[in-house]
Length: 185
Image (cartoon, rainbow, N blue to C red; front, side):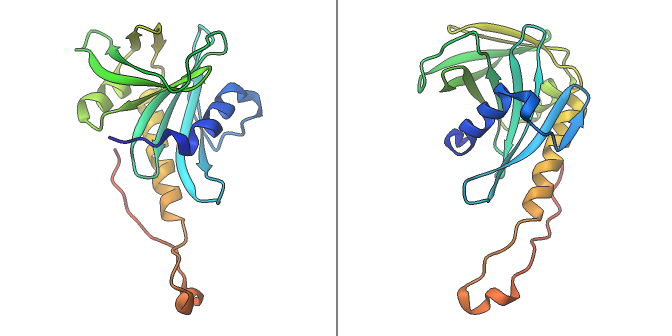
């Protein structure tokens, strides 16, 4: 899976680092979510975030192409931007899920998640997520992630379906909205 961190990393980290300034489009339990757009105004992704007990901000992001990932923002740590390392995602007592943590900001990492029922079910139904790697080890309660991840997927479907189709210049006057019915992830 290729998750294009460069499209939304700066916006995502800025919004995660300043949650009081972030106007959530949807709230699901402890999670606050919003749609994000690139500099041209094109929908790029939906993000939701919650602050863990240890002060680390945890976020999930689903791109317009349905690639998804986990973001951690921690102002108390300084990471080497551009570096990456293997990590293990451990949910409760389930088998570890291998992944790669990518440093996208001096205080933030992105972990692209595989598109599989095993990963989705673990994150939606689990109680505690532990991320273990060389850089650090974090543990978070997965409070309300079942409903929140469903809301996040609905955010992507809604914003994808509301985009305008750009037609060739000679037919631009006949532009229309895309109408899509997407299944839940």
